[in-house]
Length: 94
Image 1 (cartoon, one colour):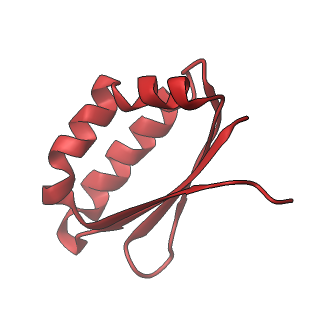
Image 2: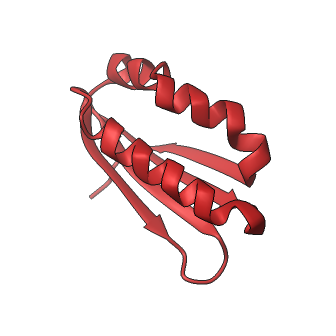
């Protein structure tokens, strides 16, 4: 069964441009991963919030994704770039 994630990333106002660039790079890299089924990024029009909608083939693929250098780099810089990150692991109902 595939894994669905929704990640909400609230940028600091002063880092929104840098964060946007980094997140778009994550999209490009993540979509190339074998286990990636869906990896979409949305941006709120007014409040520095980015939202990822992700679907992964399985937990092993998600675990491998979490070890990728571009994601490790993002995690290392998250405190500097963001005010908050919330990740929801969900099951698709319909």
